[in-house]
Structures are given as structure tokens and as C-alpha cells.
Length: 345
Ligand SMILES: Cc1cc2nc3c(=O)[nH]c(=O)nc-3n(C[C@H](O)[C@H](O)[C@H](O)COP(=O)(O)O)c2cc1C
Image 1: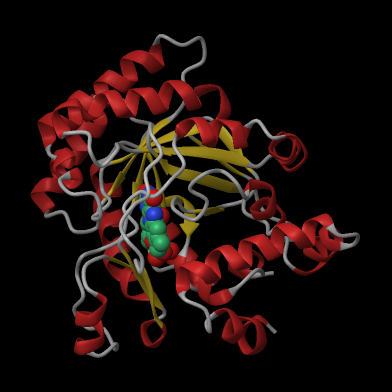
Image 2: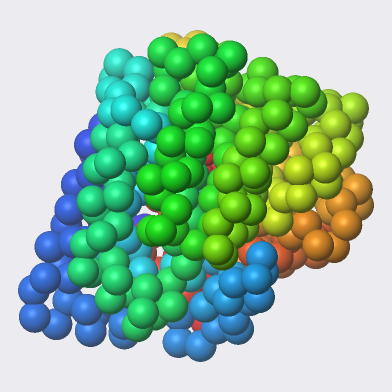
């Protein structure tokens, strides 16, 4: 029903408006009698294998990628759709509006999206307030949902002091999330991807690990990388990940590559700058995942993300070495039963 009725209605709205419309309708549905039972019956996976990774137990292999629930405002709703983990953020220390709209575009012919959101979010304090909400505690304890905190820097913070932004988000979120992701791979914050270079990256991760290791119970620290790095840059990332004692990598963020798209060149030009996600990203991100798996010790586990639209794609990421798989664009195209479908039920 989603494909022939609901999606065409949502797709009448501009992409960002449709996103919030859908999320608010879902939250509303969960408040009405029978709403939760509806989700349990139609959407939640009936049975799924638990996954052990980073010292945590995930209720299933499928998670919601960062950027979908930037402010941790829809955790309960996403848990009811069956996601085993939900990665909030990217969160920055101070609220920021992101880039001017329109900044999110659908490419239906390619089952893809282009976005240049620019880390729009309400700031880390708002995320903490939302994470304290009783509904979040409830889904964590009753459904064992795992929550990741994806952290970044404010646009106006120069790279030289970016580490302070990451540290601030890390400290404030520490008691409210199960794992952390350092995001230096978004293409939409000017200069951010420069932090993926060897020296600045190692410094940033070491600072966070020093704080992390001083805690009674350190949290798994992961790094999310771009799919556009050269083999030499990927080798540097592997070296840094080992040196910093990371628990894992997330491979990958959106790509800047727009080759071989079905969408017309003049439509792409009209859209302008932004990162591409969805089906065209599948092969590239899986190749990078396989490359990194071969270069990292087994103790550093990988979450695969990018272009997952069907259960075969999940299997391909797993075959390339992913322990867990995240989705974003596929969920927009496939709808609320997506997790169940991916887990082949
Ligand atoms: C609209 C949009 C916003 C995103 N925002 C973030 C973000 O804030 N932080 C981040 O690490 N990734 C962000 N991403 C990237 C996704 O988490 C994911 O890595 C990427 O979309 C590839 O997965 P997919 O092909 O399943 O969409 C965003 C993606 C989209 C489409």
C-alpha cells in the first residue's frame, strides 16, 4: 500500500516537508488506541537474530542512519518500526539552521536523494532533553533498542578548534547514548572533510579517547567516513583507527560522485551542490567497506551504510564484512515495513 498509495501522496510534497509530515503522522498514530498494535502487526520484524558488536547487543542487524532523527525526537516511533538501533544527529554544540531550503531533493528515477542540509539541528542540549523523555527510556528497556550519538562541529567553528565542539557533544551525550560516531565526512559543512586527514583526525580521536578512557565505563567510539576517499587516504584512516583504538567504522556517508545517474543532467544542475545517497551509492560504499575490512583487525567492526534498498543489499554488505547495516534513503522509498522486508520476513 505504501508504494501505490502513501508514497505518491507524500511525494506530492517537497522532500523535507514530507519527511516531517510522515514522522508527525507516525508519532500521532502511536498515540491513538491500536496504533502500536498496528505497527507490531504490520511493520516490526517478527523474529530477528541479535547481533553482538562493539561490546553491545543489538536486537537486530538493521539501524537507522544518522541525519534522519537529528534531534532524537522520533526514537520511539522508529523503534516501533523495528529499527534495532537509531543513530541520532549529527548533533552540534549550538543549534544551527543549516543551509537555506530547498536542500533535500528526490531523484526517483535513481531511487536516490541529494541533500545539502548542513547539520541543521537544535543543538546538543535539546537532544539531551529529548533523550531523557520517558518514551525513550521505555523503548530502550522494553525493546533493547541501541542509541548512537553522531557528533559534529558547528559551521562557524574553525577546524583548528573543532575538537572542542566534538568534546562538548561527547560529554553532554555520554550518559544518554550507547555508542558514539565522529562525523568528519559530511560534504555539506565547508572544510569538514579536511578533518579526515591523518594528523588532524588522529588528534581529534585521541582527545575524545582520552576523555572516554577516563570514564568508569568507556563507550564504543566509531568514525564515519566518506565513500570518496582514495586508497591512500583509506589506508591512512585504517592506520588512525588502529592507533586511536576505535571500536568501529561507519562506511559510508553520501558521495559527491554523480556519474551514471538516470536523472537528466540539467535536472542535476538545477538541484546544485549536495551529497548523493540511495541506490547509486550501493556499489561504491560496499567496495570501500570491503577494502577497509581487509585492512582492519577483527576488533574494529564495521557498520555498512549506503544504497541499501532490498534484503540482497544487506547480504552484500554483510558479505563485504559489515556486522551491522544502516539505512536512510531506502526507508524513504520503501516505507514503514522496510526493516521487516530487509530482514526477509
Ligand atoms: C537528508 C539526509 C541527511 C543526512 N544527514 C546526516 C547527518 O547529519 N550525519 C551523518 O553522519 N550522515 C547524514 N546523512 C547520511 C546518511 O546517514 C547515510 O550515510 C547516507 O545517506 C547513505 O545511506 P543511504 O544510501 O541508505 O541513504 C544524511 C543523509 C540524508 C539523505
